[in-house]
Length: 147
Length: 147
Length: 147
Length: 147
Image (cartoon, rainbow over all chains, first blue to last red; front, side, top):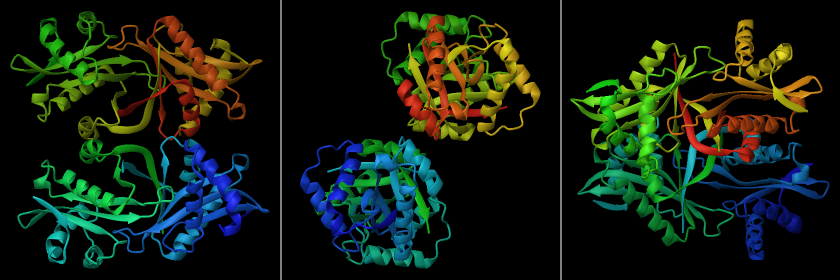
């Protein structure tokens, strides 16, 4: 299993993975445009927009992660936000999630970011079993207003 | 009381406010460079770096907020992150925090951001009394790895 | 202000206080029988049923607390559960809640209980400001099935 | 697998199970007296002290639960507190925890208790995966003062 940056050739398999993730979060009906726009951004080469890694198992994609760098006023080097992390249900328990997080962490350090963070639902028990081993759970909770 | 964008003329008063905020979060010894760098960013005019508002009470600054826009793969218009919010202790209970949040919200909508969010400690009771009235508390908690 | 055990003479004032507490928790329509039964238990002298303290301000009752002892398999001396704590809104901020908790704590120690505990809603911010100074917030959350 | 009340004949196997539970919660060195006292209480026949169920797999005990009834001022029928729940690591994933909880629930209803509750650590992910299916997670957190 190889973790590598997503490329234009991954288009179809990537959509299958991200659709699985969207369904997990209660969005089974994303329009095609939703995927087109995201994939174009991931493969644009724009350093300040989203980047992605995939877990490639001999040509079959079994996991993905998406991340972005953004400014932070307390940390001049900026921070890295890991927004998405998904592994195919049949490929879980093999360290793929961990490998994807570590790849993002390595990329973040290489860019000079001062921290890597992600948000997860308080009751994402399976995720938190992993996250507790890889990072610090902070006391911070998120408030949001949508427009 | 007027909420307006921070300007170069606010330099000294702004530092007093942000130092108060840093002390609240357990950082009483920030070097001068910490403040110089942040103020230069806030007043640089760079649309993708941090912006700030101050609460100006007849020339006396009594509150501040700092925010930044960043990409979000699920929301093409991006999102607005409100990182800092502070009101002088003697000026609390008068709606200044609310006015500062509303100013950021208005700016975020004007820019086309699709949501405004902030993070707060689970036990920031005074803050949450306000936030519960202004925004939705999500189930999300933050995991972090520092470099 | 005097904290003392509730007595039969407190009947009417006690009901006004407990009704305030019930309304705070979303129960504005408790039948009279609800109050009759509880008061009879509080004043029965039965050591294994609920006990109560009131805060008496020159004959006017301004606060109450109800507590009970129950077995605990890990602690042979048993534990004390403080179920209710209420202070009239106009009498808050004067240390009455603290005095009531301390009275229960003293009674619990005198009985040989090995700990005093209570439960509170995660977002009872005003309560938690006090509780954080008086006790340890544990990591325990409550699951419940009603019959 | 049979869920039944603990009896005097279960003495040795019961101690092995409860010791496993104590170790899980960070208490590897409980004195013999700790076990003697608890077992005597569980098998005393005293209706107001702790009761226990064991999961009996053809004579081999693979799980246990301990519970007690106590008064509640809001619920005249009282409530049932399930304090301990343990399944041998090698016997997990087979519905034993669920069967033990259901046995306590049935006993609680038979006694006329108006609710069954238990407390668990916020980060007991494996437990909560089960509890979310069997009961309601309340917003209540526990504060405690030890004597």
